[in-house]
Length: 109
Length: 115
Image (cartoon, rainbow over all chains, first blue to last red; front, side, top):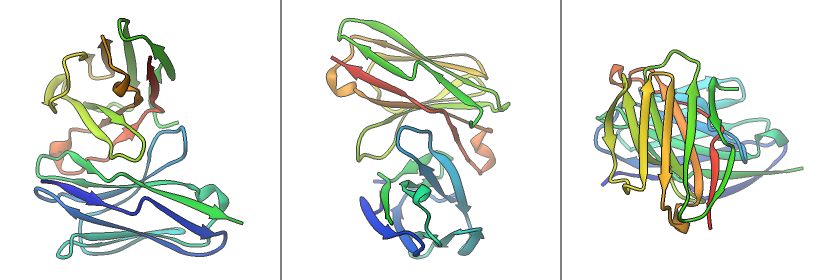
């Protein structure tokens, strides 16, 4: 079967750094996405990795290791507005997205 | 604003009612999706339409019926729902995913409560 695992909830302090991990087992691999979803709002695209390595975009970075079936999202200089759920999704061999249950990130002052 | 709109935003219905959810995308995409999002569960893909043809139906109960009249509009018709169908229903769109990059753009969702 297909499976995406990520922690249910994490807590971090404003100004700090947090790493959200995602492991996956899927039928084929055409890339991995990270989305952010604030409570009551639509998920919005954060990053995409298809090759191994680190992709940096401002305060957010995403890493991929295809051999390990592993990715992480790194958030630096945390702000209160970063409190949200972070969704990991893998595009499988049928070009459909397989989703994790999301990680709820709580930022404390 | 992601370019995908959904109405209504909130819906409360009884188990014997019939209602429809509407989604419209203004992004020029040719694939549209219905997802169900329940608390602490992964997004569940319900239906996919690509170029207005249904390409996936993941064993969704027949009380959910999709309709895609054109590439910009998508409906989800609901009838005789069960309380366990209460959830957030999200619509999304993308370019034809068979190009290998399936970034999806989501609407704000309809919060459905079945009494």
